[in-house]
Length: 114
Image (cartoon, rainbow, N blue to C red):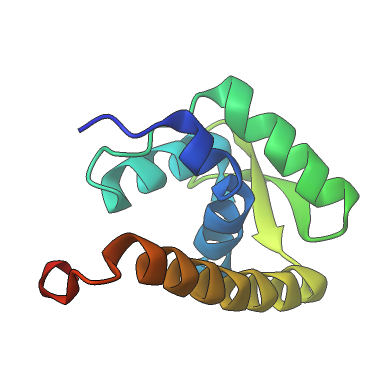
């Protein structure tokens, strides 16, 4: 099933913050993790991911650093900051309220479909 890209637009930063809450990652690793964890529903391109990462970094929610991944070529890794962790918690609360409100409207009178 194809998902309308507009539905994903407001959630991409939250998904990235959540990935980085689990461990530091480099860009391509994030793209693959999101694709795998969403069973292929979400597929980010580098042109989508990196501007979001740069914005999150400018806001102080993530930090980047260069590292040799097990002797391989240098990669730019991103990790969550303390402010990023707080922002993620807030975004998770917002998402819970939003999802609940949408479900109430969509499934009102159709309890068997929830």
